[in-house]
Amino acid sequence: MIACAPAFQSLPTGNGMPAVEVVGLTKRFKPKAPPALNDLTITVPRGVIYGILGPNGAGKTTLLSILCGLQKPTSGSVRVEGQDMLSHAAEVKNKLGVVPQEPALYPTLTARENLEYFGRMQNLTGPYLEGRVQACLSLAEMGDQADTPVEHFSGGFKRRLNLVIGLIHEPQILILDEPTVAIDPHSRSLIHQRLRELHATGVTILLSTHYMDEAEQLCHDVAIMNRGRLVTEGHVQDLLASQRDEVIQIRLDRDPPPDLEGVLRRLPELGDFSLSDRCLRATGAHTDLTALALMQALKQAGLGVESMGFGGSNLEHVFLKFIDEEDGR
Image (tube, rainbow, N blue to C red; front, side):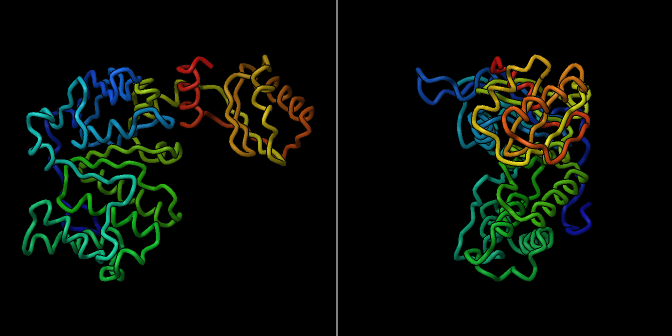
């Protein structure tokens, strides 16, 4: 039971049946266009936080839209708690809570009125609805803002309200599409904490995110997608253990020139690398030789180094490695 919201009850552990089974899922928006989803098969165990990862255009939002019942697949099947999504649409809908990427809120209504409205949409009434509204306001730490119109809220408060609207009917499975994009650190931390608390009650959580640190902190299992296909699926810790190379982390003293990536790709000592703003992360078969080669290449490019460190692989490194291999880089 969640300490900050007693109305959220722990769910039964079940009989080992997966929460969600996706088999051979394909989605085409145009007959001759590449499929948005291409024969995708994933299994989401019950009671886990499961990450859906992939670059832009990987098919993550299309997958979540199908799981939410907003789109129908071209072929393949989806089963939720053992029930086929198409033939048992009403039963499946009651088990799902959905938190879209863009907050789905009525700006002229207050936080309380938004919760009441969406609660009634879920057929909640009377004292039970009133209790759920209070529990959700508590969960979002929005008691003082309960009667403030949403149009006056910051992005962080809108995200918090968006989250608890998806929880108003106490779903068994919660689906979130980029729930912490462009919000303040406090709201992001609060949402992370609430997701952990929900997981502790047995709620299954599917989370799409571009933030690899978020996925590494929250998720037990992840699926990495690219171009509509499954690249890999598994436990986060197993994926991290599979990449044992020591990572070289370099902070540059200025923005790198556009041709630096091409220069680095030609270094025989260098394995995988990622370059984001002034941060360079790289691996190689022999860490010392790789670091020396990098320093020489950066010096020739007229770049200085503010700091250098060494550490183990993180999920971002694993993600980039699998995506680069899939793209043939």
